[in-house]
Length: 225
Image (cartoon, rainbow, N blue to C red; front, side, top):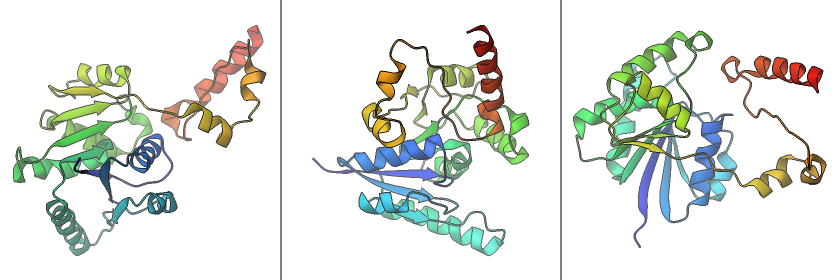
């Protein structure tokens, strides 16, 4: 079977759940050809991508130089035209902005997907620019071929505020449980937790992730039990 070319557009490849899911996907799918457009250029997974022969194209959209920005935009769309992908997946709200001109330039020629990895943000914890991007992209949310959500709660949350599409897709996060135990957790972890109730939080450190709420809740549970 012919390899399908899939382009992934993401803000950066730093620490985060979405970034790890993307790396996990492209490094374990040998049935398709994956290319990552890294818009800001930061990457903690370069070695892993090289080992898996995944193409990464770095841009520098954080530059404030107007000439550099225009050149990056030109190279970005030129690369899309050069690779002629069967599908383009935009990861997280910031990357969705780059799909908007494509709806006008390529119309129905490209299969464009938006990939949302969270519930609707608590904007008091986010930058003002993120809030602006969210509401701009909400106006165009009906145009992608589909919007992908990683949880039912996220899908319901976005539909409630009309940030949705006629073709919403639910694809949950995947984890290799045994591999995670070996890499990150004590190998005897399963034996230690047998017949015990475990409450945990796995998330990067950010106000919106609720670490303080988790600690306060844990303290209240410990007082009772």
